Length: 219
Image (cartoon, rainbow, N blue to C red; front, side, top):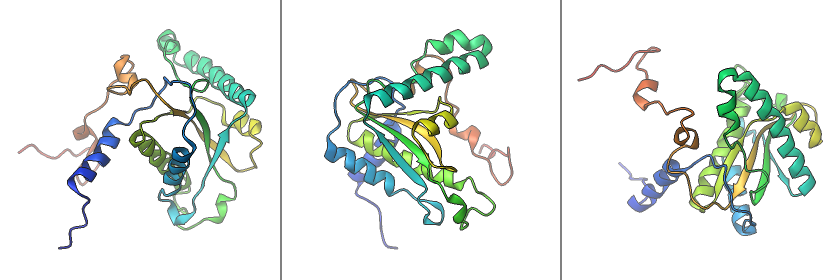
């Protein structure tokens, strides 16, 4: 059998990037090296996509006023989310949910328009276009961690309002506001775990055998 594995050192680096990736909220203001930034976007663009449709579109936000407008949209949704959380409202409002004003680069990841033209792989699962965009975001995230940069995925916004603000075409849709930049340190564990908001579930609870909910019997 042909051995296609990377070297042991290379494999360890891949698994390290996966294990140490964090959804960052705290950034040190400062520019991202444009050469590195271009590499990160190239990594995102190399993501798999259903039917090779490449549905991702990235909008780079460089206008300070527009950056502030995005921050305001997120704040509006943060307040609405707190109301919906009822008894956990105060606890939620103490959380830092974005780094929009501090990060070195700000991107909005979106679904492109005219997606109905792509049928391959989407006839029964049209949401696979969204899954493809998520793969691109994950590529960007892991590459950023390998480059020593933090990234945060912000989903607290009204997609209709954000689309209008960015003058997006009909049938396109914003998926994520991505904060990218330098950090003082990476969280040793997911931030929501560190602050006691929630905890991770073990893998064994999420892997079934043959039928839903069937756990492999202990030997």
